[in-house]
Image 1 (cartoon, rainbow, N blue to C red):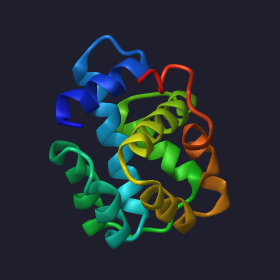
Image 2 (spheres, rainbow, N blue to C red):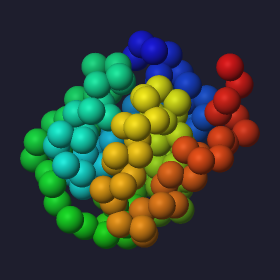
Image 3 (cartoon, rainbow, N blue to C red):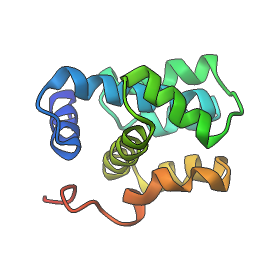
Length: 136
């Protein structure tokens, strides 16, 4: 999947009208995830993604490796994308659902297994597809 297709899919799933806010959400979610996970696992997860998107994960992981809570995760996504916390949660779920559709299942599972149980809510669309996500 190329960059335009990835952002277009995200825009559709997030139900956003414009590309700019969609990219801001993708960046917020993937940057924050990258800050929280092991750099090697972030690179593995990022490698099948379009290079314009994979850099959010990789660059954050190179700086990151931080241990922070799920609440902090939502706070960072919320602040970066200028969203409410509940919207940040839903958008994180949606973006990770799209990522899970693009990358091999083992890659998303490695990330998932690295995170504490409290992070499970962001993987809801990995297990149960969102109604708008699997139209292909």
